Image (cartoon, rainbow, N blue to C red):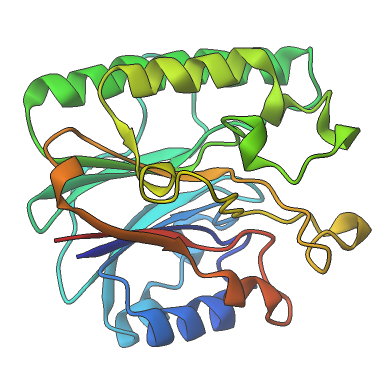
Length: 256
């Protein structure tokens, strides 16, 4: 069972890229972020033709998350992160697929920091930590996949000071990410590739793709009962090099 996460950065604009990747890699479950499309504009028909059924939570201009399942029906369990009924940003969706609870997460970017966007990022992270604890307590197999907008350690960046003040690398979100792992979650890419950079994001600016000046922002965290089933993990870098590509590449895991 291959589960992938992909910040598509506008699902309609990048639809040809998405369909080409689905046809080549054939993931069983896909978590999409940054749809940049309202619910009625989500390309469910084209995705269905590709062999995938979907659940999604869209939003105009920004945000938006979805879960796709190949030859299966994702059973929607949640369309928002609990903890703040006033928060209407489409950043979290959760579904059951083939006996596994899968969440697609688009954690706030937080820039510029300090400021209200960074405060929102940290508050959203605390809500995620609280909900993740609830999922663990339920004792069900869970994968928390998505664009966390957090570079966990210096190993996960190409090594530059240009991001020193960026919200992605600040101590507070890094500490929140560690607390999430300390609940018992396993960072699957790092578990199976302890010494590699495994970049998943290359900014459009300053030729960062051609220079491989990347960051690891996209993570798949697995619950304790799934850790023994981790078989492989990787990043489909090739799609980032395609014309009009997203600035992210899909990260994925395989469960035995």
